[in-house]
Length: 261
Ligand code: SF4
Image 1 (spheres, protein in one colour):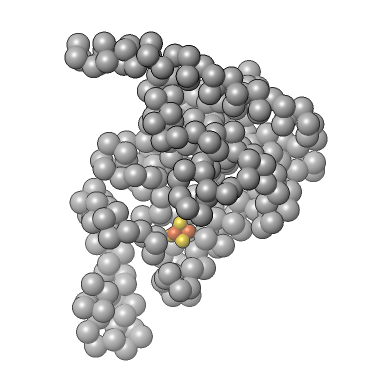
Image 2: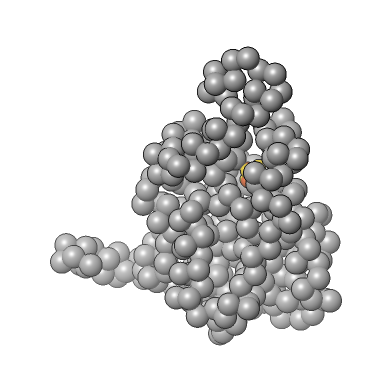
């Protein structure tokens, strides 16, 4: 760290110490309370590789006073390349045992599934079920007879659709899972401050301009995200574009290149 940034971080730490302490205490007290309330359920951190789940991982391990907490990372097979590297670095730095960091995935990868079905779109979004809900559900429904408490980094200020999200939520798709959101009311700035002050590893995708750690080929990516991804991961994006053009030809589009553009 340079001489210029050292005092800045220290200033941040001092200026926000009380706020962050209160946020941390509220969150860890809540985690302890839920774990006590549901003693048969196994505490599990739902890890996405993003900043919010990194904070939740830290809070859950602090609350339970152990790094031996089960983490589950649903591998869609098209996570950003940095996310795969970061996830392993985070696990090691956090001293979470490898056998407690599960990465369930579908039997076939993204390209194999897209060949068998067709590329997902905003109209036909089969991938969330195939690559997220099903593999995660398999783990969550079988990992513990008494069910799981899935600690998640969902926050209300992330989007309009999450504004009314519940702090404790009975997952309808995964019957054994009770979703618990300890940082649901944290603001973006509070998350960033906590990461910096606590020295928690941060996925490098944020420094590259991306706002979240997600799926490389998500049909819901904004044009800006797609543009950034094409700059950050040009080879991976070209591979997908070539696949789409070939698919367009196979379904009879004469103007396949323009069709995909
Ligand atoms: S690509 Fe998008 S829609 Fe598909 S699984 Fe990933 S986030 Fe869900």
